[in-house]
Each structure stands twice: as structure tokens, then as C-alpha cells.
Image (cartoon, rainbow, N blue to C red):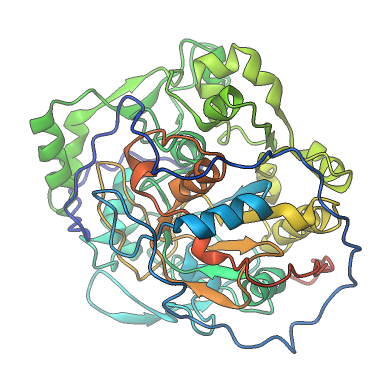
Length: 491
């Protein structure tokens, strides 16, 4: 999210990596590649007793390799580096992974958290818009909030050169060029060393938080490119009530003709012209209907819940009319219910989990306190009788204005946005593996779709990798590695 929105009407240049334009609109109904039917998702797993807190000092060094054998057949338009598991591995995944927990936090890039991680594609220096190279300095526990809206992200990425993060407002003193060390986020580094860290995992849209979370349930944002800003909160002045207030507005692409989509795509690819995409943007009510993954899960009798923290910026299903005013809404519940459900073995086949805003790690919130929230959630999963059959995917929703040196592929009008951290935590996750596959939020949806034999929702998840390269089903599952929370008083 960005709490200080500013209309970015200046020219912006972005010549991003790929020139593939994907049209996002109606849900795609193309079938998935043929595969054997999925196993039932409801069977309880064998109880694994919890382990004491563990030390990371004896862990082997992380490895970055080319990964598993060649992937299964990729669909046309798949990005370079995309992996899709072959039938044998998919069948193994269906036997062993019966619960997926998708945890989404806020506003960090890969370089901000893992730029110094051994074996990963990280950076400890960054480039600025005047061509200088500057050190990425040690971050404080609480940092300044930096601009991270849609067009300003294009400004910062500077045509894929990734060198104008110092042009964002609140970043002129290099506030974007900061980094956390292992001692500041020890749990995240421990999980990255013990399980799998993805270092080519991109945000789905240039930013900010609101539309990013729509991609985590729909693999699209209904053309929206921003959450509501001051002046768009409706006649009652209460922000972000979405489908519950017809007078609210948010910024969106209007419906474009094919020629206009091509023109807008080209404008985004040059920093001198990207500001002109405003001609294609309108304000509209952020309450709309598109197919979301919960629809597909419900139709196939696959259990799911969305455990939502108290955060007005993060309410994607409150923007989907048929969910919010229909029976699926009963599966949108509060975040405090997650830990008891996990410990009792009551997690559904698919869980989304988001924190309250104060623990989301959105600046200026405490990273230490936010990490402790994540430790409590993951600890509950590890102590659960469902641990042996669970895969947790932990990621962050947008770049938050922070520096990252890797140029995202320019897939369509919406993204991809800058890299964000992503960790796969599971008894079946590859140990100490740095995953080089090209991934984004739609990849988590693709994983779930393949596990349950569901069709892709649309163009993005149809071409997305499925994250299964992060797993090794050839060895016994590992026991949980419970971590202790930290004292944040000195952070």
C-alpha cells in the first residue's frame, strides 16, 4: 500500500525485458494439460511431534542450481525461465501436498531482505538516476514509507535499468537503498536456508497493495491499477468499503481496443512517455465481477478460507461482487482464527492469510514485530497434524518503493512488477535451494490449480510456472523446525 498517494503525471520511461502483450479481460477457459485426477484434499495427515527451536549454524550453505529435470510441456507464451512439473512429479505432489497456505505480507523487495543472501541473485549496491553506484545501507527496524504507485514504479524501473528509485518521493535521500541483514530477520533467513528461497519471484503488477492482492485470488485485477486514495472514499468519507459503498472510486484502465492496448504497452516501455498512459485511465467503483480461484475451488468441492487481517488496503474479495454478496463470503474470516485452526488440524485445502496492517511490515511498521507474527503463524502450521501435507508460500505484496536490481519481464499492461521475496516452507521443500524459476503471484494459483485439476483463470496463470521445482518428493518429509520469537525492544 502507499499511505501518501500522489498523482504521478510526469513522463516515465520503461523498456522492460519482454515485448509480449497479454490481453486481460474475461476469464480464460482453456483446459489444463492432461493429467491424472487429483487425490482428495480432505484426508488428515500423520501427526509429527513438534521439535524444539533450532539453530541455523549447522545448516549447509544454500545452493543455486539449474534445479530438477526439464519441465513438462509449457504453454505458448510462457516466460523464459518458467517451469511446469512433468506428470510424474505432479502425481507425487498430489499425493503429498493436501494443504496450501498462501501468506502475503507487504512492501519489500528481494534485495531489501535477501540482497546479501549466499547463492542468491542479490545486490549490496544500487544504481541511481544520475548513473552513480551507491551502497545499499543497513536498514533500521522501522523505515520511511516510500512512494510505490503504478506509474512511479515505472519511473523507478527506468526501462528495465532499475536505477531511478531515488526519484520517488520520500526517497531523495536514498531511503529506497536499504537492506536487512541476517541478524535483523533471522527467521526469514533460517527458513530460506532450511527450505526454498525463490529469487526470480516478481510482483504481479507494478503496484500498489490493493491491486496486487486481487492478483493473489484472481490472477488479474479487473483492470484496476490502484486502491482508493483520498478524494475517492465516497460520500460518507469512510475509506475502502468497496462493494459496500457505491460512491467510492479507484483508478483503472478503461476498456481498450487492441490498438490502444498496444499503444499503452509501448508508452509504458519508455520513461519519457509512460506518464501518458493517464489518457487510458478512468475512475470507477471498485466492485466488479471476475472469476476468482475460490469460485473454482467451491465448484470442485475443495475447501478454502481467506484469513484476513485488519487492513483496509487488503480486502480483495470485498471487491468481487458475487463473492461479497453471495455464499462464498462465509469463507472470508478473521486472521486471529488461523492459529487455532492450524494447531487443531482444521486448515482447509487452500488458505490465504494476511496480517493486520500493524504487523504487515509496511513502513513505518516494525519488521521485527512483523516477523514475529509470521513466526507464530508458521509455528502453528509446523505444530499441526497437517504439517506433513502442507506447503506454505510466504511472500510480500509489492516493492514498497525499495530498490531491486533485477529487471522484471514486461508481460502486459500491468506488470510484472519488481521482485519480492518468496519462501516455500514445507516438509517436502528442497533444502537450501535457491529457485531460479521465473515466478509471480499467479504461480501460486497455478500450483493450486494443478494440484486440484482446475483450469487456469486467465492468461497470466495459464502461462505461469507452478512452483513444483521447489519440492523434492523422493525423500522422506522433514520434521518441523520451530523457531522462537524475538524480543523486539532493542530492534
